[in-house]
Length: 465
Ligand code: FAD
Image (tube, rainbow, N blue to C red; front, top):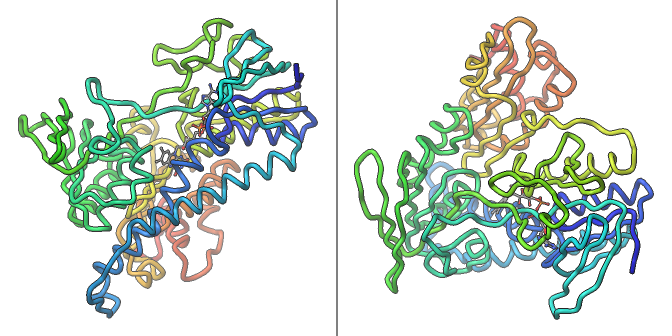
C-alpha cells in the first residue's frame, strides 16, 4: 500500500494548493479527486463564469454602447455558443496547468472517490470500480460543496438548472428566473441580461447581495433594474412547476403570491458540503448540523491527523479562502511558520456589472458593535479614468475606526473594483491608516485614485468632491 506523509482528498483550489505547499515543505504528498483537477472553481465555477462575463461585457457594449461610443451595428449576431466554448477552453487550459503543477511538485494524483477506512487510511474507488488503498500520516479533507436545492424542487438540467448545467449551456433561453441574488445568481443574471435574455432575479432576503453593505445592495439593484432586469427581493420561492413550455415559479412576497413564467429557472440559493460517503462518522470527525466539518484555527479537526479546508468547512465559500486555508494546513502539518487567518478580513467579490467588492465589516455592523466610525466615500463619477471608460456607476466606501483610523472594512461598487480591493486588504494587513493610504501617490488617471480619494474623505479633506 503506498504510504504518504500527506494525502489530500479533493483537488480544488483548497486541495491542490495545499498539496503544492506540502510538497514544497518536503512532504511526500498524494492528491485524490473523483472527477477533475481544479475542482468547482476551475471547471464549473470562478474561471468559466469570469470568461462568460467578459463575453457578456462585450455583448452589452455592442447592444447598447453605440450611442455613447459612436457606432452602429446592423444585423448584430451574438454567438453565445462561441462564448461558452471559449469559457471551456479557458477552464481546460487552467486544469491542464494544475496537472503540470502536480507533476512539477512530484505529487501523485489518484483519480477516484475517497473514503476513510481509518484516520490514516483511505480507500479510493476509480470510475471503473477498481479499488486501491493509500496510507497517510496526515489527511486533509478538501472535498468542497455541491448546489443546494429548494425543498421539493429537483434540477432536471433543461428547465430547472443549477450552476452545473447553466455554465455549459450553449443555448440562450428567451427568459429565465434566477433564484438567489448572491454572487452566483448575480453573475448569471448579468451574463444572460447582457445577451438580451429576459431576467427575473428573486431573493428571499430583503436585498440583493444580502451579505454586502446595504448601500452596495442598493447600488447593484439600481444598476440591474436600469439594465432591464426584474428584481424581486423579500420574495420566497414556494415551488417550481416545470413542463414542456417552461417553468412556473410560485413565489410569495410583500405583494402577495404570484406565479412567474419563464423558459428556465436557475436555482442559486447556496451550496452544501460534500461529506457524504467519506466515512467521517466512522473515524469520528465532528460536523455541524449543516454537515460542515468543524476545524480549529490550524485547520485541524477533532481527530488527530485529519484536517479540513475550503468549502467543506463553510468558513467563507470562496476559492482564494480555500487556497489560503490549504497553505495554512500544509504549513501546520509540516511544523513550518504559518499565520492565523482572519475570515472577516478576506476579500469578497461579485463579478456582476457593476462589480461588487468588499472586505471587513459593514458600516451597520461597525455601529452594532458600538464602534465610532468615520466613513470616507468617493464616487466613480468624479474619477477621470472611469469617465473615460464610460463606466462610472458606483463608488468606494471606506469604513474606519474614528479614533485611531483602523480600517474596519471597505465596500466598493463599480468598474473593476475587484482589482482595486487588494490595495486595501494589504493596507489593513499592514495596519495602515487612511492618512497613509491618502499619502500614497496614485498614478493619474487610474480607477485606484478613487481609493486614495476615499481615504482623503475619511480624513475629512477630500480633494475632488
Ligand atoms: P472544490 O473546488 O469544490 O473542490 C472539491 C473537489 O473535491 C472537487 O474536485 C470534487 O470532485 C472533489 N471531491 C469531492 N468529494 C470527493 C471524494 N469523496 N473523493 C475524491 N474527491 C472528492 N469563488 C471565488 O473565490 N471567486 C469566484 O469568482 C467564484 N465564482 C464562482 C462561480 C460559480 C458558478 C461557482 C459555482 C462557484 C464560484 N466560486 C467562486 C466558489 C468557488 O468555486 C469555491 O469556493 C471553491 O471551488 C472551493 O474550493 P474547494 O477546494 O474547497 O472545493
